[in-house]
Length: 475
Image (cartoon, rainbow, N blue to C red):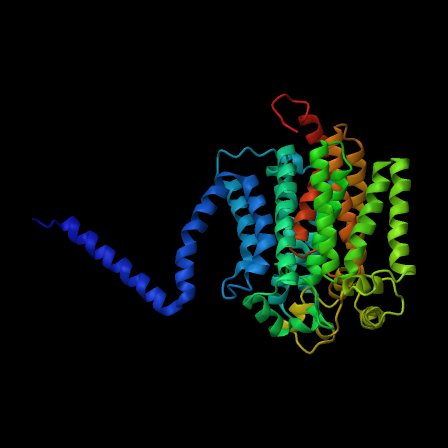
């Protein structure tokens, strides 16, 4: 048998590849093997997303749900950057894939304007003389502005059809159900080894209180889980009241009950504001007087149950929810005390201390400073501390503007089912915005991505309503 030069070349190439792979595994160990196994799927997923831009947003939303929890199991992989990866693939697809049709006229609206203003203010914060670290800004700005700056226009351009809003609900509800059962497993069966390691690393003191576990599922913590699952609960509840088939309404209602139950299991008192504010927002938006009266009566009954009775007080989760309505609660008073400290510190700092100087990023990049060591315990206090009173007023103004303009656009929608879906997103948005006073929720994942896509759908409402009249479009 004759051996050709081509055969020799192929064998040499194979040996070189095998040698390089062996060296890579020796140097990186188990993590290297994991990367080699995952890499083909990552490449395939990247190629697929480049060809289907709206799927990139869907992938980003899925990653936002799962990546934080996955870090507990594979801590050495930068899974927190998977949302960035999905959005980057979408941008690459938009720039280089000639099959993608882009209607840039959808960017001609006031939502893009306020998005640019907010991103511009965040960029200007780099030059804040109080800022301690550009690196801290780079990490923290992703949550405060960058994801909003990317998600809003990309949704307007590439996920702007009624089928895309349906996909958003399917993903959110499917992963919320998964998160709920994951949380039920934690509470009734027990935590696994990775979850216990995470608690032992410093979270046990805040997640196991008086021997009772605050369920956190695969979210970053119990606070984010409680608010996030309540957000899904508000959306499911609003859809359960909509003009859909009886079967769908029952499914939505069961999901809403499941999600609100898990909200209670999380022991997150601030999450109670999500269904309260979200329900009130929906009742106002619906302009249905009869439904508004019934809803307000329901809220009054829940409030009276928690405030004026001791029923079910032997249940720890109910007691903890009840403490949210106690003005003398010690943790509430500590928060007020910290806010007074921030007020004094920020008197001479109208632009704040710089992005990334408070909370976990502050403890990482500027430990020992006032902002890093004083808990902000609130999204709005975080914005105030890092961007000053100017940034806070600008941020609140933008959020209020989006809510007002969004509602005006939703009211113009004629299709009743699309209008109800938009009401669900609107109620969820207002609920999270209100609850963000007590917890740093608004820019956290996956809540942030859901809200930014929701905003885009408010401003796409009229276009989607018109498209539903076309025979080729399905509701």
